[in-house]
Length: 237
Image 1: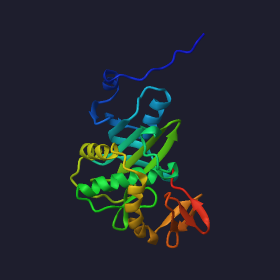
Image 2 (image 1 turned 135 degrees about the vertical axis):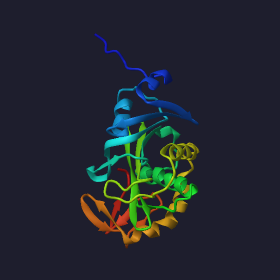
Image 3 (image 1 turned 120 degrees about the horizontal axis):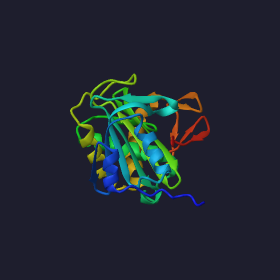
């Protein structure tokens, strides 16, 4: 007996799954009241061939989101929980796949900056306000698709980190981010700006293979990787 191949959901079928649906530029958006994790949900739907890229998932409440080093990123009350999926073919040809986290994260940093928030990106995927973390991204590759999950404490301190305490709504932030992202600026353009900002990371450390390594003497390479203690490290995670 032949297996029945699952097909991509139509917009009307998406509306039955999500609380609300909309479209911004090339992106379909599914908005939920609550999910365990936007990234887990999006990954599962992509693996079952139910979602067509590019697509974004956003939720008001997240109970067990994926964070770096197997940590969770959860909460609600006006904070930002979203995941975005794009085909590799949509990305700029000069983007080193190992630095996708920097690429997606820095465009979000620029989006928040344009909305009046003075944040910066600590290598490779953490958003900081001064010396305190307020959010981060985690990027995963599934076949020919990149999925980027983003969590940011917009209003309230959660997950052990402070908040921006701003009045930006998650919906407006996602809208502005997708408009910026779908332009898919070249990696060279993004890196030229991030290279200047990298100096702010030097007084911090990063976890490499479960070891904490200082960034004080790290060398930032043109492909977004670092050389730390003679070892090259990429940012995809």
